[in-house]
Image (cartoon, rainbow, N blue to C red; front, side, top):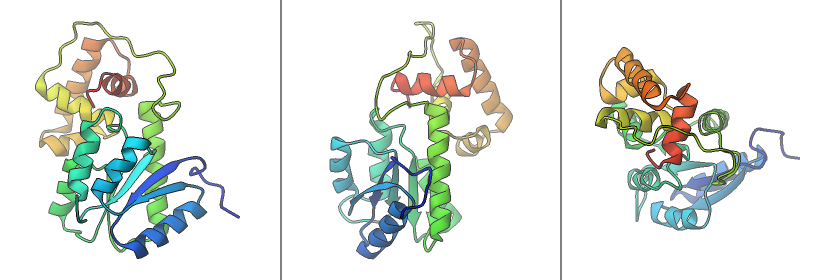
Length: 215
């Protein structure tokens, strides 16, 4: 019998060119209550994404046809998928590798080999965070009222970058690291955007960015 888990009814897209890893990770995640769709590389994954949008993507970095970096770039540029959490799996564990992965658009970077329990914990944490921030009642459904802001709101280029990171669920500290500025500077940008839009918090700011295809 499958364990009761936050994974129930959540669908994951698992992408890796190692069939043994695919088999092991798929079995473990399904045991924890997730539905798992698989692909062998980024190009095959894009074909899957044309048909359905998963709740999360777990992706190897180095793959033939299309690597993880290129795939995540496509995912982040497409408004249909830009909100989907992405977890990178990689055998490369140097700090510069982690930084490149996160800068590319991944939400989590895990180094192989990894403990299955840690993978599940990261998946569950990312899904909970995505649900809180995006507040999506269904996969791609436009149910619920849209966030309303003044029609003439204009963001600076830096504010636009910040709100894109906010929509991905990143904390101010993480955004500051990405942009190489202080956390106080990011807090100031978020505060300015809340003032411009009349929104009340980061969650509403993230929803507004997603609904208007800024993220």
